[in-house]
Image (tube, rainbow, N blue to C red; front, side, top):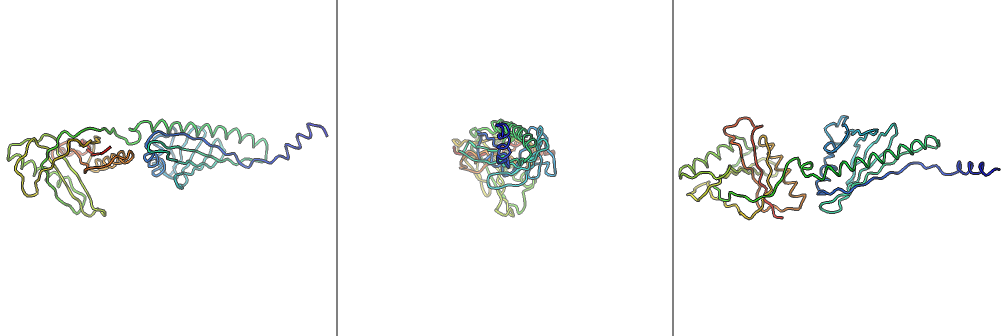
Length: 312
């Protein structure tokens, strides 16, 4: 038997690889809680995905198909800190898993692994091998897109969050309760009550009305607290009291346009910003009602500034 024939026989006898295992990874320098919340818990890939989005879950989440170049990636199910995907790449099927591994408060490693079944046919196997290499390049590009996205906090939270000190520290305040979510009329009535009170003493407001809404655990009882910043003390009585805000407390602030429900959602986002960084909450957060809601009926024009006290 010739040497070339022997090599051919040995090649045929060599075990055939059943599948190709691929892996790409990246370290994301952003709050790990934010990465896990957006990418794993809410599966909001559409925020950074560079291609198109399709399928029954087009708004995002499981069963959404994300398309990029030759690949289509469908989020199929979740497991602990990981998402599984069904992949079709240039006519080739693969199974992928994206693992999220927090390394610290501000860093998360993301590992994208794929498994591609091969073939006993050497020509087909070679074609699959070539496509597998391109799939690995594709997932690597996607991870780099994700990494770049998370470098900008505005991309994560959808609003600019700043830290500042509160200028208005002396307030007259009052409160009321409601069995349902407070209406604009209830809130405006409390503000008008405070304005009528300070007008009696010729005192002017030094800032915008402040509002805090707090619900019971099952949301069947609401506490409505409003305050007006004033320059000096005046007589108070009954359910109108003084509040003194500590001037040394730092405040996270953000501005949002829209009705009260939009402001509530923005406050929740600011809360995520704080907990993502392990900031402590030494006092209740509140809304500063920049727009006079009693004279502007169009809620899309309402401007609200959120004040969220923190301890670093």
